[in-house]
Image 1 (cartoon, rainbow, N blue to C red):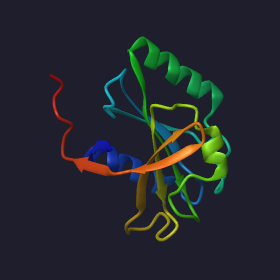
Image 2 (cartoon, rainbow, N blue to C red):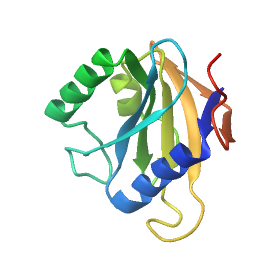
Image 3 (tube, helix red, strand yellow):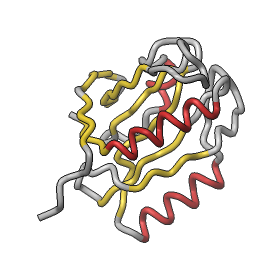
Length: 145
C-alpha cells in the first residue's frame, strides 16, 4: 500500500493538471529503506509530449546525486496520462527501473487542467509484472520512531 500525505498528493495532482495537455512527471524521494514519500520533486518532461514522458537526463542525474548524498531513494515515480486511464502502458512497464518504487499514474483525461477530479492510482512494477496497490492519503505521515 502507498501511504502519502495530503500535501504531496495535492502537489502531484496540481503538477499533472498544470502540464496538461502534456504528460507531467516527477519523483517523491524518501529515506532509504523507509517507504516514506517525503520530498516532492517535480521534473521536466524532456519529451514535451501528450503521450510520452522522459526525464531530462541531466536533471535526473543531479537528483540521483542529491538522493545519494542524503541517503534517499525514489519512493514514488509519477507521471500523468492525458487521454487514457491511469494504468501503466507497455512503454511505462518497460521503463520501470526502480523495483522498490511505487509507480503513480494520474489521468487528467476527464477534466484536463480544469477543476474536477482525476484518476490517481499506484502500482508496483517488478520484472514487467504490474500489481495495483491501495493508496491511503493521510493528513501527515506518521513520525519515525
